[in-house]
Amino acid sequence: MHWQVVFTDEARQEFNQLPAREQSAMIHALDKLAAEGPALPYPHSSAVRSAGRLRELRLRAGRSAWRALYRRVGEVFVIAAIGPEAQADKRGFGRAVAAAQARLDLIEEDQT
Image 1 (cartoon, rainbow, N blue to C red):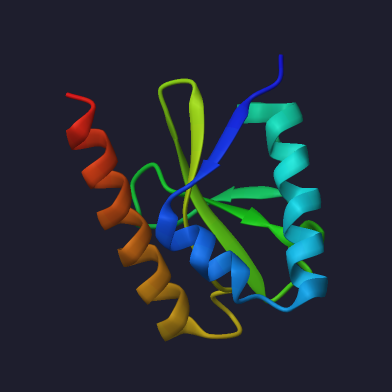
Image 2: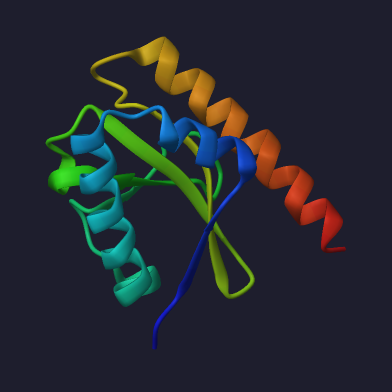
């Protein structure tokens, strides 16, 4: 099965602001998510602690300073925010998590 992966408008803008090398790594990680879906293993994907069902896509198996924050909504993976890795920028990661959760909550409300 090939899984659908989509961006929120805000996450697409955040992606566009990444350096080209990081965009390339992100595309590679997104391809893995589309191929593996919920079976994508650590270190490529990981649950975000204290953030409900939010997950982080870890570029270069976690060796990148950037993360894509996502959740499965129905049969689609929604990339809701792009932010810094928690160890590199704890506040920035926290802001990205909060933004992702708010964006995903709006999407899930629209589906009910």
